[in-house]
Length: 259
Image (cartoon, rainbow, N blue to C red; front, side, top):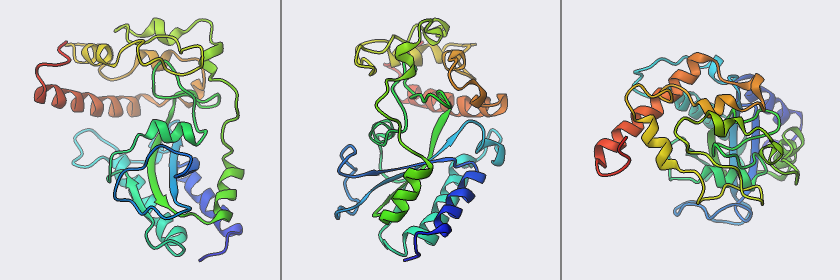
């Protein structure tokens, strides 16, 4: 196994230059129940590779109509390099589980890893990057303790402070949502599953000429981390991709989520 010294720190720096500028390792014992079929030996967990803001998008050539998602393709390439160079030498069964692979509750893993807080817009939020973060890859591995320390040192988990949404007085995201799909967080700082509504969001996005087709007005209204906002091209790309997925889902389930 490669030694955990300056070499792994350099690997983290290389990933950051490529736009994967936050990592978090969540031991299986601290996260949600992992999908079946993954190696279950002691010491395994999920290594999350994220990008904040447009750092990853600026280095990714993307255009609408691509046969494969360029964000997923590039994320997978960088993740596989990390696996081959640093993780598989000590854990031959280490594997990439996202993108591709079994379904993962990424929000639950992010919460367990201290990466983000709950937010009314349900994408999660941080006090630095606001809601402008995304998981690009996830690896299932028994990671070297020294590597874990290097990751935690460079990317410390959030402390016990509450979501910045709890102290937000104006709640501009709620006012900006034209579909009325958002509600304040519960008193414990978590999303109230009975408040707001994903169905309302979907129905409004599927309306003809919806203002939510190519962007999320609520997300854009959030004052936290505004310097990390995606540029217009990346906004259009991601929201067009998600809209096409919603349209395909509605075509398969015409009895639900009608605009």
